[in-house]
Image (tube, rainbow, N blue to C red):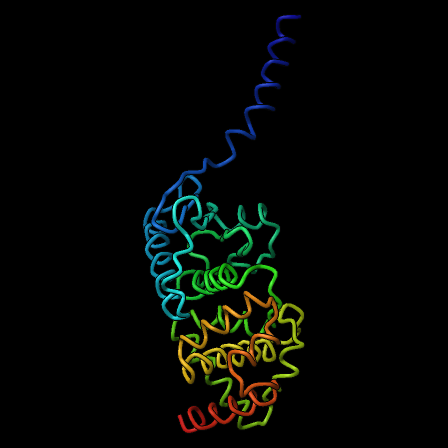
Length: 267
C-alpha cells in the first residue's frame, strides 16, 4: 500500500513539475544584419523568412526616407529584437495587450512583439513601429515631441496604400472644412481618441505634415530639425531654429493647408 501511495505521489510531482515546462514553447533565434528575431517553435518558416526580409528592407527604407542613412544605429549587440509568439492567444497572454492588437513596440528597448500573419504586419505594423524606434533612437527618449509629429514620422513609413487612404480623408476634411488646427492637433493624445473618424483624421494630418516638411524643404533640413530636437530636447525650440519662417505653429499650419489644398483637392 505504501508503495502504491509513493508511486501516486511520484506521478503527481512529475506531472506538476514537468507539465508547464513541456507546455512552454521553445524559443529559437534567427539573426540578420540589424535584427535578432526570436521565434517560438513551430512557427512557419515562410513567415519567419519574410519577417527577416521586410525588417531589413524597412530599416533601409526608413533611414533613407528620413535622411538618417549615414547613422548606422543597429549593429552587433545594438541590434533590435523582434519576438514572434506562436499564435495570437499566446501573444495576448504574454504581453497583456488587448485582443484587437496585432503587435506592439517597446521603443526604449528596441523591441517589437507580434505573432504570425497578424493583420497588416508587413504592410503597416512592422514599418510603423520601426519608424518609431528609429526616430527615437535618433532624437533620444527624453526629447519632448508632440505626438502628431512622432506618429507622422511612423505613419509615413507605411506602404503607399495607407497613404492614399489617408489622403482621401484629408480631401474630405478640406471640403467639409473640418481639418483640426495644428494648435489643437498638438494637444491630442491619439490613445485617448474615442471615435474612429477623429483618429483617422489625426493620423492623416500627422503624416501629411511630416511629408510636407520633408518634400518642401528636403531631407537635409528635416535631419537638421531632428538633430535640434535631440540637442535641445524640445520640439517647440527646435522647429523655428530649423525652419525660421515657423516661429508660430499657425504659420506652419497655414503653409501646410495651402500645400494640401493645391496638391490634393483636384485629385
